[in-house]
Length: 397
Image (cartoon, rainbow, N blue to C red; front, side, top):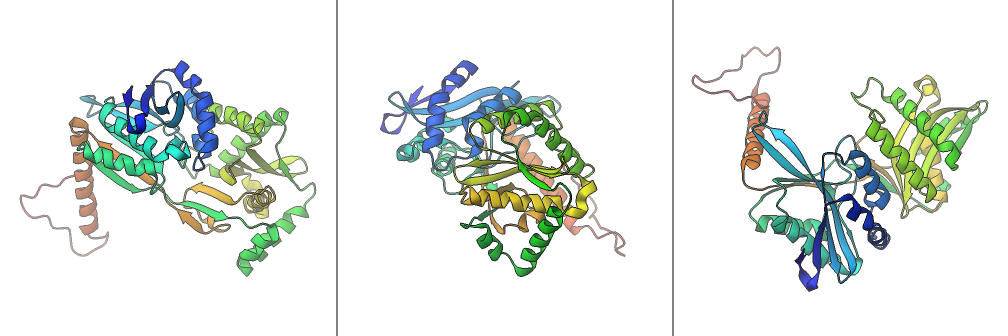
């Protein structure tokens, strides 16, 4: 335990029992921090650790003023063998990232009146006192946040090599006060297409838009969502969602927790009692977060994905959401509904040593490989690539 600005005390939670004892502090900070996301909620973080924490070392940094928690940063350390097992890289990561999960909008939770000083104290501890890691690898930090600024300052002050770059774009849109106002904001062509697709679906026998709200319906709906997602992405990706026991177990329990708190948005389209499309979303602090979806390609002629997304937007507006967040992934179908985008930042830092040297070598080899590709004549070119005598050719890993 160490001191910090304004006599803040910093401690590190490293065992499961202490993690569970953090619940009241965590939930209070989550409620008070206006910048917190669903991915930093107690349920998301604790359930993620339950399903993905094996073989990882818990490392939650907590700032307290007296007995009260005013900031926390949920982290863990994982070990990777490198160079054929010659050395082990100890990587410091955020809880929620890893395995087959990739959440957005991470960082820490802070009491608003202490956000700056708690961020500085936690960042200083991570850089100076927390020695269990060789490489820091964090994703989805908000640009300009006190935590990111403090981390960049403290890591560089300690002489670490720091890299910060934009993460994948996130598509989103501000929601108006009514569905008609939203439709009026679309281009004439897009509005007509959306209206025509909905009318076509609603004219079908047994057409119905449904929201899962009863816990007794959740297990069946979860299995159908997983099936529809696999149908939608079969042959399009090597490993679609719901492919591993960890992913399925985590999201099934998370849905149960979200449902009990009124935050789950599990939506479906039905034709004569058969669910042909589903959306898995979450509503949190005035945001509708679109997380996962799927539909049966056998019904593609009815555009079930677009029709269901329209219903989801309408529901979000009816329930007073201010933002519809499509989350990461620059997919064209998202821009059919919203055009705004933002980017969080990814942060990497390396302590000096073999891990830093290995990553420097990897980056250098990749740069050489990319340079060779840029200068290599395209297939069919009349001129062969010429390599001066004595020049060594490097190939990246």
